[in-house]
Length: 134
Length: 228
Image 1 (cartoon, helix red, strand yellow):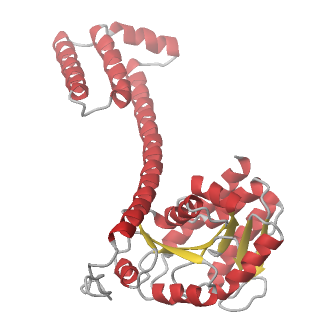
Image 2 (image 1 turned 120 degrees about the vertical axis):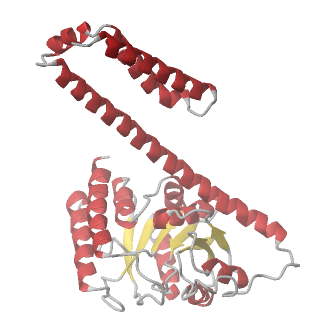
Image 3 (image 1 turned 180 degrees about the vertical axis):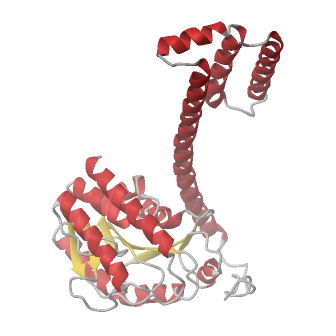
């Protein structure tokens, strides 16, 4: 069901992707924590690409009629899992950013207290953003 | 006893001076802090020019994040009482002292300034009143407690509640949700009749689409808070 030619293309493609991701981790552009799930999936795909006949066995074991259906189903589920993990991450990040912004606001306040002992004239209201006003 | 007024402000150039002067004149016992939520107008310049005590958020956090900044400030500076007070001039500073007396006298955890006890002053539009009634009903159903004005932004907290809010506060449309949270934690809440004005300037953030989001989000938040 898989021509040898396509099988080779697949294997080479997956290996290239693996190297690409590993290289990004090496350069610290990707954090290992978040790329782990991609690595696992790629390794899984590599195994499948090397032994496509296993696919039929897994599909039968899961009670799925055709391997193609299983691939689509698993792909879909996997995508959802990754998106969900990202949502969780975004929630956590936004909570952290919020707290950081609040602390920055307060630190600026304390620093302003030390600086604003006289000299510089305060900016006159309505002088700076005249264009935006009204 | 140290008392703080937290004034969240987003594009309130027309009303911020009015609000702060109202507090200085009618609630002289209270300190105040303005939280400028990254306004795009010259609210910040006006505050600086007038020498107001202002915290300037570097990014827009929304009303919840802004108010929480105020609670954090109150907590860090050892305030015993903190009260939220809108920067658009809707609230009247003359009621702050009454609220503080109620909070201290009855040893409450939060006092809400309610428009719907005496039914005096600006009563909001009928559509909004329906929304507010709905939340009153929802909270009553889920907790058995009647809060006549669950969306009121005029709320005074004691030290214990300040700490709780500084740690955890809803992001947007926080009032009904955090009220429910307090009830669930068996904190003592009471309402005090107040009068409010119409906003003195600026625009409301509410649009039809936002109202729907508001209703759905807050309903879910209250229900989730109930089962938390």
